[in-house]
Amino acid sequence: MKTITRKIETGDQILAMLTVRGTVIAQLSRNNFASVSEIIMELREIAQKYSGLTQLFIRNFTEGWCVNSPLFLTANAKPKDKIPPHEGRQYVIAWN
Image 1 (cartoon, rainbow, N blue to C red):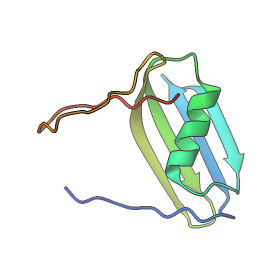
Image 2: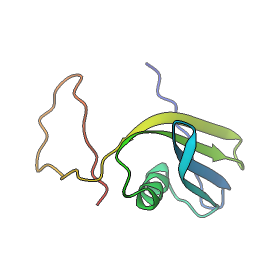
Image 3: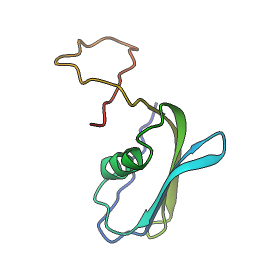
Image 4: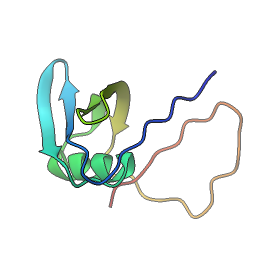
């Protein structure tokens, strides 16, 4: 599988949103993001009470690209001290 990397530079005009079954539960539109991780953390903060499968959409108007991907959110995840490597395992990312 080929990994596609998209760059975000400070100053790029970004629209990002989380949707559930077509309903927007969190949305941001700014030009001062430094990374995709920063966008996801801010969306997660807005949608902090929601747990479940969402659709993540990020559009970079400056660079002319967009990404649409499923994202599972959980409000009660606790970070693990050590996660053993295992082929095909799914991981929970805690946004505390």
